[in-house]
Length: 129
Picture 1: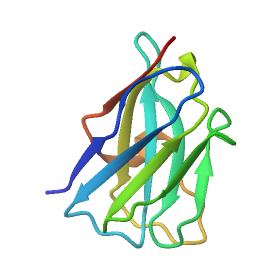
Picture 2: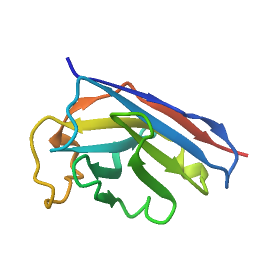
Picture 3: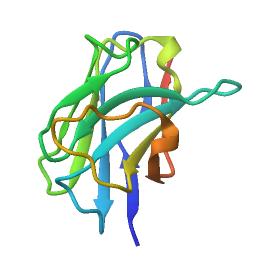
Picture 4: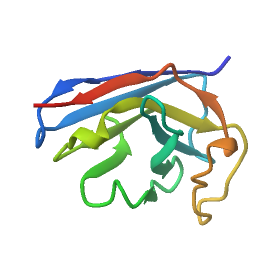
C-alpha cells in the first residue's frame, strides 16, 4: 500500500528556514501530483505547494509564493518543501499528500485537498521568538 512519511519539522525563530521532506513508498511517480498542505490549531486545512511528478511543474498558494519552494528530493521518490523566511503565522502541522489518479503533465495540479488520496501523518513546524 502507498505510504507517505514527512520529516524535517521543528521549532525555529522568525526569519529562519526549514526543509521538509516527504518520502513515498509504493507510489508511482510520473503521472500525478504531490502536494503540501498545512493546518494550524483551530483553523481549516490550507493548501501550500504542489508539484507534478512527471513534468516537475510547480504551483503555489499565494501565502507560499516567494518564500517556499517545492522540489523533487535528492532521494528517489521524495518531494521536499523548503520553507524560508518563516513567520509565526506559518506555525502548523504540515502534511504531504499524493493524488491517486493520473494527471497529464500539461494539466495544472489541483490545490483542492479532496483531490488527494494519500496522506502522511504530518510534521510540526513551530515559528516563535
